[in-house]
Length: 119
Length: 251
Image 1: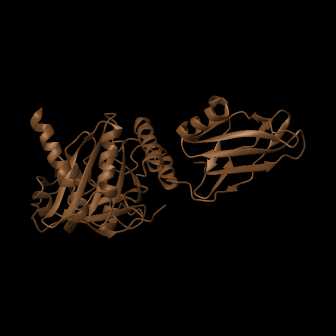
Image 2: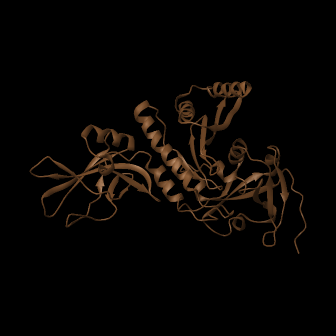
Image 3: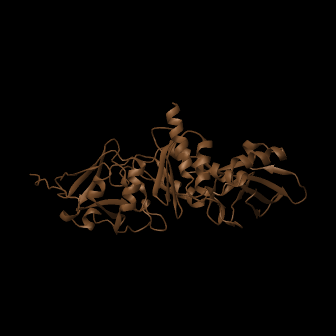
């Protein structure tokens, strides 16, 4: 049975997992880290208050975690939806067309809370 | 401009050593081959970047101790590093095995990191970002390798001092180049669905951030946006935006 759907508030933090490929030598996060899943208008995130950065990173050091504000995504024409899955209660979706400008703004607003181990 | 030369002794046989000239771009290779009357197909050895893609060129010839007559060697692969070059495998010439030693370059190989990063991301498998991403498409690799080579030519021919980009795989199977400066940002991306490149240019001006995004349909358009990034005066992105708006209005 799936858990109840939570309301996502503007103040909520959202965790986005990213690979080490998206960090340059100066620690800048690429806009490519905020691309929708291919063929959809959805970008997977986790609702921070229902998880931990380590769980979002799948307990794998090759992944990092960036945090964005739900309200910031909304202000950029996105819809934040809590969309839990069987194995991830925190799973959520940032839905909407992501132009290059929007992806870049999301990257600029993101705060990296877990850095991947660079390989 | 020749990057460097490479030579090593053979242990026995008629020829003293193998001389290799390493040229940064195929265009320059072609020119020098024409000037010297060397067959481009046999004298120019393209370095293969993963899946047989062109990275740079090397002329190889045997130089005789007693004669200045050069003889072309068969094509073979090289590994090019930031500061050195070495033969990928030993090769057989006539009945002798030749094995090259690593050769130190006098100057770092331009954009080496970019080529290396592309080489690495060609090896990414499905789901490489954990969000079911496909592998990077061969077309995007080809387009972006060509763009790197073209930018090297522009640096040489046009003094367009474009810096090495940060190379990023994208989750749709594409490749993105990114450049950052204090008040400017530029990204150019190759997408699997089209042979054109998309771009985003951002500039921080007194009033805030301004940005322009769109499609680059030709080398000239790529060159123009690179000129903006490299040497455009503060606020000059506005002129590109006005031009883009004018172009849309006239359609």
